Length: 275
Length: 132
Image (cartoon, rainbow over all chains, first blue to last red; front, side, top):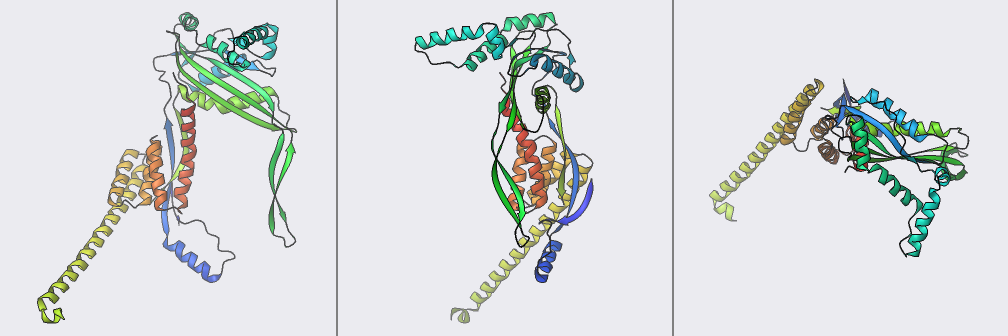
């Protein structure tokens, strides 16, 4: 903590001002002097879930969807378990749980699920019903798995009723090429700086991670909390970044918010007290 | 015309002026005294806040605002205390009032901008929540 004396009205520059102006400014600054004290603060943010009654947590499999060649389920389970071990008070269970299902185009095609969807779509059309998109259908299928209370109750019984974390994960790369505005300064004939604005075409790739976490009570199989996060990162053509690195970068952004559901968080900073 | 004829009226008028002047002076004196007391409370609040006694600091700065509702410093400090205690809505209210009173105070503005970052983040996290 420190005490300082400083003007309230700003850090004025007197260069280039006339003598009278500078004198007036100094007078104004001197008369407006005040003491200030810098103090560290720690802002408490309470956990969203009361996890006191659960001593143990089980990160179960996820329903995944991706157009990239990464094992979303395995990577996420491993990452969340490690994070929870170090940053929560809950005992993290190590258990082999089957993934809830891969809903990527390639897998759906191989398993014949796409044909099933086509049949549903055709039937809906012939009955004059509103058209359903493939994503809506995937969401419904995933919801069926995630809201199957009997299934989660069985898992709960097997692992002595822990808090279960599961959910949906979608990770994809998308083109973000387009016109990007750029500002640069140049100097004119009189050496004065000038702002030049221009639009240039840039080839860019964006990675998007959509995650919806379900917190399920092992004892009843009921979902007690659900939370969705979306993160995106964009890379230029020259930046060679793998899908897996992008996934980790996006998960790093998302993790503080995920952890704030289960454990209290603290934001640290400094503020100024005025006398 | 009437005053020259009625000496009592002149005396009354003079007395009224004298009383008005005296009560204005007294009011000013009282206000000055209250402002000084408010400053003392602000300073004491800072001392206790530096010792980590934020609840007492809240009491001191609230008292300062009672004494001098126009004190932007007391409101700024009270906002910091509310922030420290996780009372974001109250902090927001006090920062905004402090800035209304002293819009050019760079320290209040800096505090407020830093606070808004944390506040917006918290609100975003709360909005994202899809709890059942």
